[in-house]
Amino acid sequence: MAISHPLDRPVWTALTSGWAHLAHGYERALKLDPAYGPFAASFDGSPEPLAGLVPGPDGFWVVESGAVSAPEGFEVVKRAPLPATSDDGHTHHTGRRRF
Image (cartoon, rainbow, N blue to C red):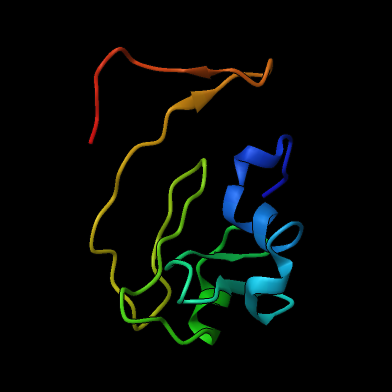
């Protein structure tokens, strides 16, 4: 999965930049220190590398701009849509409020 904007892959971007000191894992998959949150991401957005990580007490929360599936031995418990960003970097909301 090519990254055209850092927010296309916000968790991977954070864990390989400003939050790298809070990242645990290996070159193909990283997770945030569970004391700070349940987020995880793979290097290319695919699910297989996530199988090499041990989930925290809340599992993993994977945030991607595209569809997400679980690696073998895991299950997707919940899915939620994200607001779309355009090429201009602005978020465009659907007008519906989500919580």
